[in-house]
Length: 232
Image 1: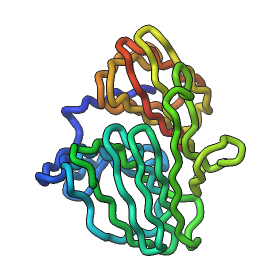
Image 2: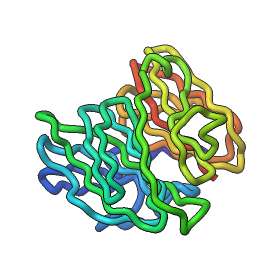
Image 3: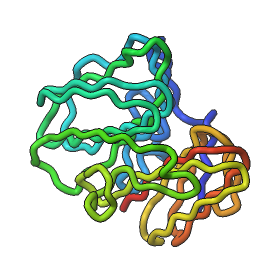
Image 4: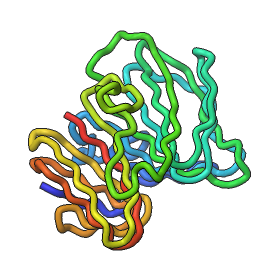
């Protein structure tokens, strides 16, 4: 099954400093048909204005992956971690038993990012945070795994859940293949460029929900970038 979810159909909240689109129910947006996809609970498409951001706030028992599309985000948390994650790179926060963090756009331009929450397999563990640069050249024409429940096997950031977060950049006419299990759930978004997923066309920033497939072929109609999560 492949379900294309048009960008215009997503939940929307404009707070001035934050313009957010919600692929799944979040905050004041509630759609009982879009409560998540497998263990993927949140996928927010955020635009954060220059010199603004999320003040300190708490989380617990959630794996939170931030994929920065343009600009940069600066992280600070109650464990003493600090870091700046720039476009194309990824940060991961395992909220565990509880963590308070702030995410600010300290740049002079807007930052755009995907914030993805995945339900962890294990609760009650100590919180943690990590970030990593992933050169875009290494994912041209094929998927690169950025975060994984098997980080050593995948050479990726660690998350405490049976899931993989991957990305690819494709020139128009190129394709990338993701092999999986028909029992798992995949969710894909192309932040830029039109794509076809197993023959079905999607516009930039549409959500693409997939299950029951063992092979996912992503074809780029335009130059495109694609972010994919494969979860139980």
